[in-house]
Image 1 (cartoon, rainbow, N blue to C red):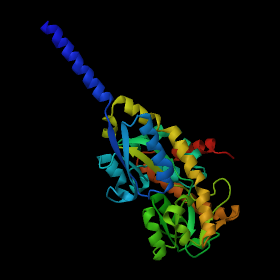
Image 2: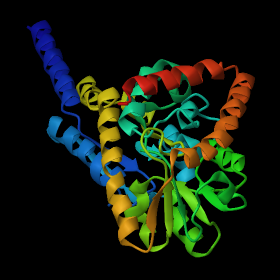
Image 3: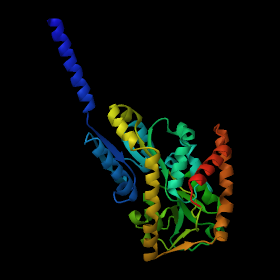
Image 4: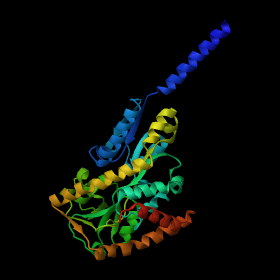
Amino acid sequence: MKHITKLLTGAAVATMVSFGAHAQEVTLTIQHFLGPKAPAQAQMIEPWAKKIEEESNGRIKFEIFPSMSLGGNPPELYRQVRDGVADIVWTLPGYTPGVFPHTEVFELPGVHLGDARATNLAIWDLMEDMAPDLKDIHPLAVHVHAGQAIHLTQKEVRTVADVKGLKLRTPTRTGSWVIESWGAEPVGMPVPALPQAMSLGVVDGGLVPFEVVPPLKLAELVSYSVEGQGVNSRFGTSVFLFAMNKDRYESLPDDLKEIIDRNSGRDFAAQIGDVFNNVEEVGKKMINDGKGQVVQLTPEEKATFDNASASVVDRWIEEAKSNGIDGAALVEKAKAAVLAHTEQ
């Protein structure tokens, strides 16, 4: 009888443990560097979090910390998620140069052709190539924005000769190389610092997508926003990382992991691409309705920039080689993948 009682007690305990694990509730922190009304939070992070909360019946909850309100500076975001200071972050790999040598390929001139969805799908086609960069975190999405336009406080530019000597903001080293190739001076800074730098004359302008015009109120500062026309209308792009602390992810019950997995990866990245493509027109309208104007270069004018920045690809390939990466092959692979998803 004692033996039976022990068996029943053991079974009951096992059932309770199993149920407890299954019913575990977690609250995950999400930190990023833009404001709460920015498309990154309002149209990407918040809908994603809400969907997961609903699918988990409230067992997964999120606390979102915009504008670095959990502490630290934007360049620290990758280390914060790697080390568990934040459970999840949205950041730019380019804020930590050298840590993401493979993902940089999608920032190079001539790779991204202006369609965020197409480039995001290409990134996931090459995820096996990107894997060494992501080994210390759990990636939820790797994506780009629609592409950089040149936003200027005073001077209208039409050819690469017009930007010579100008101070232009960029967030990444690949962006710095592009600006240098034009004969301009790169000034590295996270995007939240751009409005003040523009208003104080620290920079003459910056490379950012139109997506950030509303949250940063750039329409109050910009006189000219410059882009090309059609396919490859922009001046490169920036890669973004939406990532979770690896240990935090692994600590979740399998059923909660499955919910996060189901809402992450390729399909999520494609949705993000649509978000960032669609918000561009809002920013353009704000520029045209404000003190500035959107300038569209002719193909010949745009070519002066592209021809100058072609050297950046060669520079990146040489550096990649020193890190044991076949950069030339990766560039061609990335270009082919982007082109395959781009509507001509």
